[in-house]
Length: 117
Length: 113
Image 1: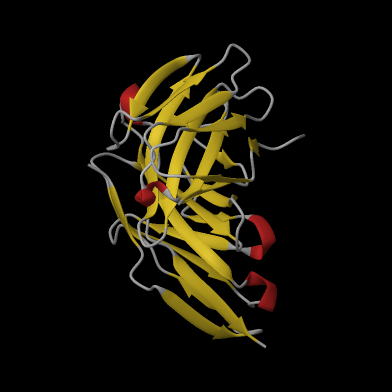
Image 2 (image 1 turned 120 degrees about the vertical axis):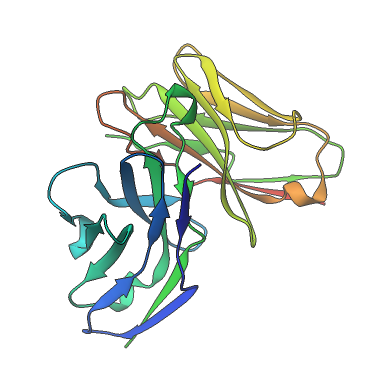
């Protein structure tokens, strides 16, 4: 079984400061990892993914994430936060060796990011 | 390129009624996924369709069902609605050529009174 944990329900940062949203995962094989962002009353927007290769993944809107296999983590980061980054962030995982019957994503519970002006 | 579209945006039903939600995937995408986002329960996988076939379903009762049409659009049906079915229902699509990136639609807000 695969699972994702986002240990922080809420993260507050000041505008211009770096931000980190934490994610840890559990899968049987190698993970496919994703970050999505959700603005109020909207669907999820894809930010970035890790499939294989470089552990540092760059995505949309200046976000990046670092894959750490030994710590089973995939934390989302941004060097300088903007007020417009305030939203709900979801980490998701899929096991790369899953059979065809298990291609759906398993999502974390979400982290509400608030960037204070 | 048009994104995933869903209709209706909002749907209000009463207990015991049936609801039908629709999803059109991104052009070229053959897989459609349905998720339920209920308050306090996070995102839960409902159903996955690929090439017209149901490939997997989540831990939901049989009154949640759906289908995928030849043009890859999809329909989610919820029978015998219960109050706890009130949620945002999200549809996502993915391409067989791009590993596992699911792109989401704006969702349908279902309210059961």
